[in-house]
Image 1: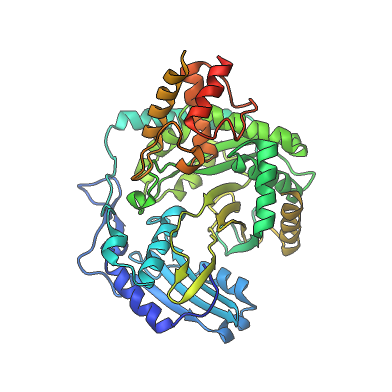
Image 2: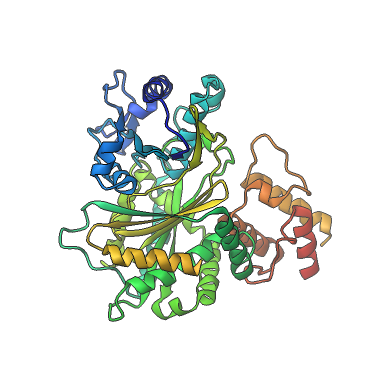
Length: 401
Length: 80
């Protein structure tokens, strides 16, 4: 989150320490044993002292790294110290009006909405709201759902059939960089102000329909990605996993921990990138067909075993797709549902996400909205794109949205 | 089918699919207030197709038609 003014680091550390004590679940770890062949979340009686960390980054350190953007990218790439650590907080002061408080969250414990809600709860605690009021109604754990195996097997069959049908068209992907796909993740954060955001939502309404922001944003992204791929690149289609949130409850506190998302698997013939209207029509039609076939729920059901390690699902899918990779990943998180706009004595100016892009495809474009402003983040594995290409992608996104 | 029957079916679907914590949902509740997004709207369009045999995904369904359960029921009734 971007803060409007500096906060007292010592006070923040004390508040955070007391807040974290209320959530012993975060000190747990993924475990397997001979009694439970399926992975499960194991609580620990004696949390290691470093089950979470708070690091303070001063102005000189950030300047040495080349500014706030680089420093944020840097903290997003620091690996967790051990298997019990799933959260790392960072307070960055990059200049007189450049302050950030960030959470690097392990996707085994939180998805994007869960992490956003956890930070919102901490903000409320930081301005002296009662911890019991803030934490009320949070279940300490949720059922693993590791029953009815035949049902899950049938769900897996349906997902496989869909992916095999998609594999008839080969998928375009950016070439793997020399160091492989496990290099540093790079981020480009793009902010649209309130006026630009209102104009984008008006265009989404007129071109895609009421509440159809996601299809409008994705169609535009397909057109921008098309410019990043060489004309001579092989592949007949752009194939993209689109993250969808399966939370049924309006109150995200009920489903705060672990992952509650699934995917729509969308595919577009390369030629379709010429027309945003055709792309929007195709996205809506594919969404309708996949929701009617219950595909997102079947996908979640089939991958129940991987509920606490969902990104490995994306690792294994290209195998199903006969080694054909995805082109890019996409998510639109929608409006932030946070209730607090202050952290200690500081106003919160913006909240955005820098998602580590799933592997593969190694390229992802994600959107979220805070306080009437749209945030876009381009994430990529270093070496897949040059900085000039990312500059072009940012320029085209701004021009086309 | 009467508008009241359409309203009742829509209300039952929305109440069970998109529960709004602590707030009752009625025919005049705004769908935006319930927190519908593109995916939940598509879920509702699938429900409408299955229950009223109407394909609305490519129709020109407007913000006014989706203002509330009552206005959506009127829109559906006009198409039946």
